[in-house]
Amino acid sequence: MKELFNPDYGMFVYNPDNRLYWFNGQTYESNMNFELIGLILALAPNNQVILNIPILSVCYKHLLGEKPSIDDLEMW
Image 1 (cartoon, helix red, strand yellow):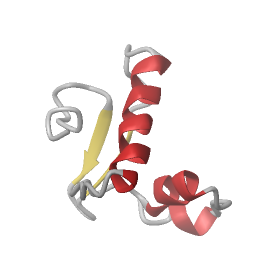
Image 2 (tube, helix red, strand yellow):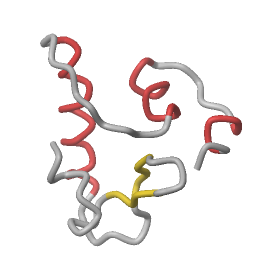
Image 3 (cartoon, one colour):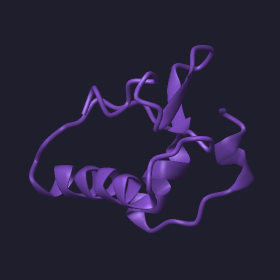
């Protein structure tokens, strides 16, 4: 998981001010790769695996089926 969030890999960008990751809108990776990462993130809690991935709260809300708000993006 650590390599997937490596900014050199290009799927995510890192904001050093708040130490969070967000999706890289300029990547050449296919949507399928992002779906696979989402699947891993969704399966981890079901399998009692704790992942230390600092992503924005809007991503967690999406995984929980909650509606995100503009306030969630202000963190970025």
